[in-house]
Image 1 (tube, one colour):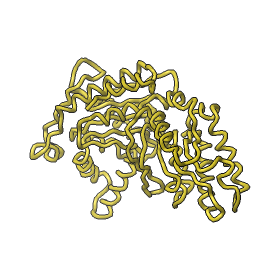
Image 2: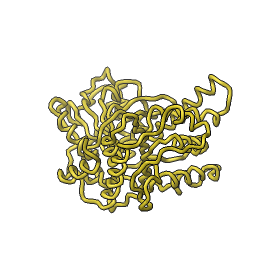
Image 3: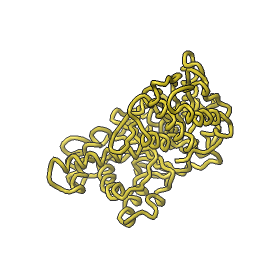
Image 4: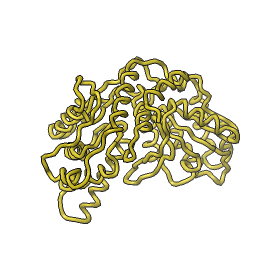
Length: 383
């Protein structure tokens, strides 16, 4: 299986990416970590994970790879990549994740992961006596048993409930030998900045700096904007447009590996069937023909900088509810400056020519037209 470095060089050769020294350094580190994983596995069995977690004296087998801090090996259990939006952090992590020869691995958006953590702790509290803190060791063992390579995309901490859990949870995961690759817009020292009771969060920051190699991904521009410029984003008719959507998705993600991702909205989970590097690929009927509403569209457009949407039909008057949801979706996309690439049965003017709300739909038509312009495509995603 080709490593992340080989895949990265292929993208450079294809012109999907431009040369960038910071990205090149990051992919070299990820290549080294990929190779190290071939000969690493957390110890299991009687003297392994479970026994060691019972506060035994043994420590996890060291991960032998070249850290960025020094010439020494084995000092770090993964990589923390941070930098401003659009610098290629998620794309590089996807290259690493696809190349990692590890069965027990998982790539997940950090917000979705923390929603799962809170849900698991709540269920345990309902089933047995004990406080939240007492459940964390059990949860860590469960997570490590399922995936000892964890890739967290877009780590950010804004909730005090998350802040109070993270230190103990990550300490337990690292002690179990779990390897992590994390992307974030913030350096560790800026996480949960000015947050309530932040002094209780500081041990987590120290833990990240101790256990992970830190790398700032600096760049002079947002590469995602470059991928969008010159693109056609509205394709009609639907029939025959799927190949163009696939090509657009590949270009926007720089060939990233597409996987399902979980959205958590108001305590309810739903699946984005395909996503990579901050780009979601969705079907119109799935997104607008069902029960989704403003909160779902807000979460979607906050999380993804681009949406590829297939199969927008010509809407008849009896589908006024669908038209209303589409209006809400387009409003959220427009307000957050998300790139919309779509296939439609007809042009924007003819999508909903008659029916309740058709007059108000003119604003949506205007926005769909504007969102095809280079001025719109050059704007930065607003989270």
